Every structure is written in C-alpha cells, then in structure tokens.
Length: 173
Image (cartoon, rainbow, N blue to C red):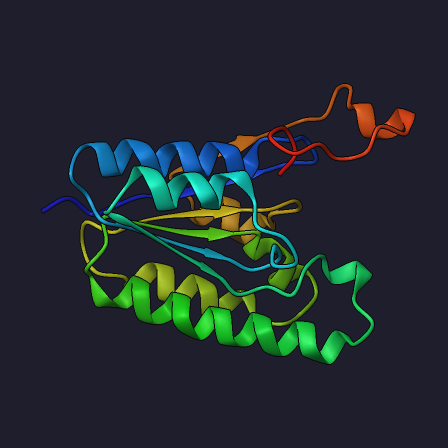
C-alpha cells in the first residue's frame, strides 16, 4: 500500500481552498472517501460546501470554525472551536477510512497558537499508510513545508478586494 502524501496549499493568493475541493472531487471520482474539515469558515455556507453535498456521496464536510479569527469578539470561543475541530481531524486522519483528509485553513490554528505545530507534525507522521492529508492556509511554516511531499504557493498579483470590491457569491465563497 502506498505511503500517502502530505500536500500543502499556502500563500497570500486566492485559490487554496478551491484547489483542495477540486482535489476532493478528483479522489471521489475514483471512488475514494474524503473528509474535509474547515477551521475558519463558519458564518456562511460556501458554494463549495453546497456543491459537495450535491455532487458526492464519498465526501463529508465538517465546518468547525466560527468565522474569520481576526473578526471574533471572543478569541477563546474561536480557539475552543479550533481545538474541537483539530480533535475531529486527528480522529479522521488516524481512522484510516479516508483516502484524503483536507484540513482547510489549518495554518491559522498553528499561527495563532491554538494547536502546537509539533502535534500536527506527529499526527501527519504517524497517519495510516495510504492516507493523503492536504493542508491549506496562509503562512505555512518551514517545518510543515519540509514535511510535505507537495507544496503549492498561491501568490496574489491582483485582486478586486484591494479596489473596494466586496467578496462575491460564487467567486470568493
């Protein structure tokens, strides 16, 4: 049985989650089970989550976040939601039931100190054979990048948000 890969989508550009959901569809299309855990999103239902509910019986999505961390009134609530999401993520990764587990926006939990980086690295190292784990989020650290088999950096060159254009349904969410 193959080892499984660690995949990282990072950078300040748009498309990290979209790419991860595309990977989920690819795995599902070949009959593999997928588990997606979203750590930051949570205040609104995104188009990608709606699509997964319609398109695939092999993909489960868990929205564990409370919204964007920097907008929260109570950072303790955000941290607790992150810890609960991480506990669920560990269980899903270690179960060996999934071909792919996506940890969407996991880098925020690391960068805000909600979960220790060494704990994430240990779970990735000890995961069952054949389980790919895809991590997304800005600011992936050096140790995560070194542990990964595949790293893609999305780099913003131009974005309408910088000119005052609000996020649009179907494009940003």
